[in-house]
Length: 415
Image 1 (tube, rainbow, N blue to C red):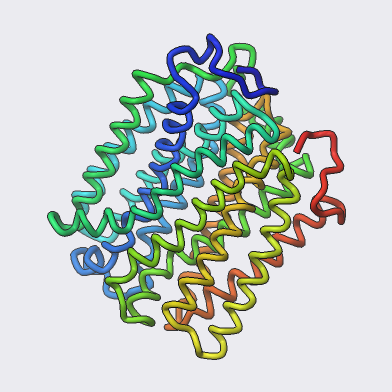
Image 2 (image 1 turned 90 degrees about the vertical axis):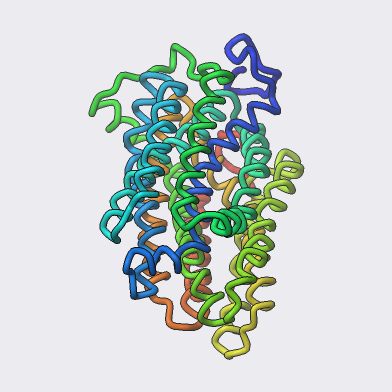
């Protein structure tokens, strides 16, 4: 495939069809979602087993993974641009499987935190490589369409992950979840080994050096669209991580309905999948800016309504579920398009560019998520207030990035 069109796999991609390509990339992306969301129902049991008395402290089991995931992305990008996507994918997925086993044998808070950081570092390749592999093959609205199709499969994982974690715990203690993650990571590695060709074109290989990394960083940070949409993505992602950090406590401490958590969480997450499926059908006709900017405005409006309900003291499990689902739908429409627009100027350094963007959005989002999660006070106000503030800030960033002109592209990059 070329970088400017979407055709059937060329000789470079012989042996794998379009549907299998999308499924494999989605499975690679799903590694990270499983590493986060399958943990959520197990947090109380893990806290008791590992002596974590303070409930807010349990959130670090999620946050530690995210910090490892974000930081290591700076490593994978240059390596993938130098040595190719496939060998880095195989090595990192093998390491993910090993670190999952280590986490399963953790016997203290310090051990589980260290193991989760290492597990997140191993999983960091999934974000960098999935975007880089797609960018090797597509660009513009076609890239946005492929990313949306990938997200349909990928976003099914958050829908079922908490239920999957709870199902595993019916037969095994909490560490059974980590053994499942080890098997999944190993399975992705085997699939890629047998079926995925190398997607990096030989002429696009970059030398690993501080100078090349600095040049890539200058391009990522110096391009208005790359930087602007990366920052906007960071802000929205921070709100999502704040929700993930707090949601188990919300259902346990506020609604006193921990058994309903997997079902409601699945309903909320399913709206992101619906949004990505919708985006795949409309983005080529309407454009990434019109779709994502409209979705961001909808996100802010729904978040404001949700905050008003939370402040009034009328929050119920149903208002929370419905409004959160609407916000996640808007998040799905905005997020995938923001990512595509941020990557669009970086075709020839997709791996390194993706790693720098991923570092910013993940570490920044994790830090924001920790602040929101640690602010949990027995109400949904911290989460909803966080969504409003972050949505408004993201809109301000987009407004500046587009020089005050929303909904329509006015740069030479196809969008």
